Length: 488
Image (cartoon, one colour):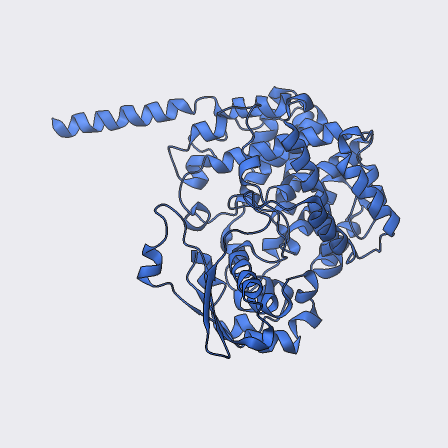
């Protein structure tokens, strides 16, 4: 009898939780289809413009640095088709879905794109937005900002609703690609002026293409991890265009029996309030968005920041260092630190970006980490390699773990032994570029100019200046795609 009662109580509770998500997809779709510029807070407009500058920069920078960039470009160019949208960096045009595939793929090739909680949002929305805007022609800056802000809000809310710790590791998905099919459909659909009903179909068509397994990042370096937003962006444009033509997509793709949360995330109780609370009034991306100031995997940043802190606080010179020990930190810290000999001698740029020993060596030697450090010359710099030989890793002690504040994630410690016998230790107070440590316009402009300097097709300096001006005044620009013409 008691067992039956407990089962009934559990069923009622589960039913109550499920009811909170009733109509969730429809509500989010309506928000994405009807959001207007006037509803956007000034802080979100400013952030969106910064994201546009940052994303266009890293996309174009990849065209001259990433080995896979010319491969995907030539593949798309060889197919031909209607010349609708520009291929960044290389020039030439392709159909909007295929231009989105190329440009979205460029976005993560340098691993320098902006970051949120577990994923990269801007590369899933911004390359797509410009490709669709070029296809349409005459899209104003305000309309572009609104579409990107709406798509980014959709992406952020879906991700925030997933309350399983380290879910991208335990469930095995890349959030950028998995969610990008729907956030991209929201962005493209808003630019196309889809009704809420058609936007619902676009979400459904996008969802039915969903993919993005973390297997792409297992083992040796693969090109697949850089192409997440290429695949999702292309699929999202196709989804919005098919919905515009009347194709009916799946319904209830978030809360349904075989929807995103139950099928991919494997949870029956996502955080519905995070997904739906304050639609059109609150924008959670403002609280968790960050920019990268160093061009490497996000999990190298705390080690970089701690190394830089010790370097500055103690006026350390490279020749003062006897050894550097990376201690503990998040799960990824060990993954990015071992096997040690391979991490000290990365053979490709992407291997270097996923190596804490190499990246820490660069920071200690130069006091900064730049794109040039991951070029062939940077990977073989004898000064850096000599410093990398002094870097090692060890797990955090029980006492160090116990000292972490309750509920907080463990941080990475850096211990430096100097040649005079001193032992210096630090954790980063924060990472520059994160919401708690925002960077100013000058930092983002410097990063943008550096990225553009690696473009496969050189961009005149006056065009770069003008593009920066237009991006920061985008709400007053009549045709936002003039920015692409300046940079092509």
